[in-house]
Length: 500
Image (cartoon, rainbow, N blue to C red):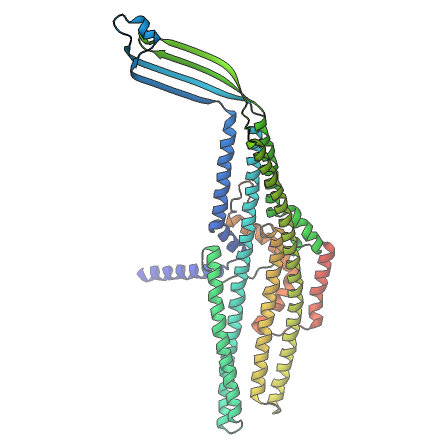
């Protein structure tokens, strides 16, 4: 019975381990983790809450204000009343009890309160867009960190495999030298290749650690051992850069925040202009005072009044305040135009990098194919005794460099596509991590995003299958398809462009 229980327990542990290892972390999960726990989002949310508190403060001016005061104690009086009522002396002492209560209601202030509330509401909306901008930038950082970890790990594995391969070649060349078939020169050259491979392996292991540190800073946790290679949602990337620029200028959260901030500054001008008008306030008050008759006696006073107040500085303080608001509004307009130019520059640079990396990826794949073909020729010639084993090893080294360049070009192209989405402000939308309510801008639950992502990725797999399989073949050292096999992928891109 005990053995049966132990076996069942071991099977359960093994199944749990298999299930945990089967799950691979996705880029959506990395982005959600960053949006949930990064301090920059919490800072932006706290700043918006402060603006909401200010809105409450300005809005409270619509309600009446209450004032109450009370006084009690012993008083001494020497005035005309005390002297008129005293026979022996002209002064008096008494207990004093005094109290007052009043309510004041704003009736008219030149619409200053209304404009102040509208300005704060516009700033709150601008702060919500700022939160979305912070989230967009954080999502971009998360995706790039995710891709960097993937790239460094794959490159390290490729170099590690080559390092093991050089050990095998070096052993074979050493045997040939001992048998007198080769000389010491080939052994020395092979040793240099072996040292080069060891140096590259150390470098890429360092890149893996650096990429993991960056990933941990952004997402708040270290990357999983198993990570899925993402596929960008190409339908969200316009074909023409002019369309992307127009979209960014109209819908980017940074641009929308600047527009709403500029509107708030314009409303501030109207609020400051309101001080040129008189203010009207309604007052309802009651006052009671009780002390000795010889000092004045009891007083009861109830009032219901409308008060007008009109303060105007002879030094021009109000006019200076209005002028300051106008200059701040002009500054906000200039800042909005500056943001518009920055967004256009960012979008154009992102598209340029995307096109450049796409061309470099095609050239790198072609280089891998040609080097692989050359290696096959050298291997056949080595079997025929036409070339030495050192030449085969050197060609393997060239193939390693070509594979690494193709791998780096592949991830540059992936990063450039995500950067293009981020430059337009569409990265969160393409990853399905937008908050359910834009006014709240709270992070989305990972379960909901995972379900939505599975549907989105299923529609994208057909378009990107050829490219992904070719990349995986290059990284793993498999045979690379020729140009005829790559032609259908290019046709699918053209068809996708026509559909867009």
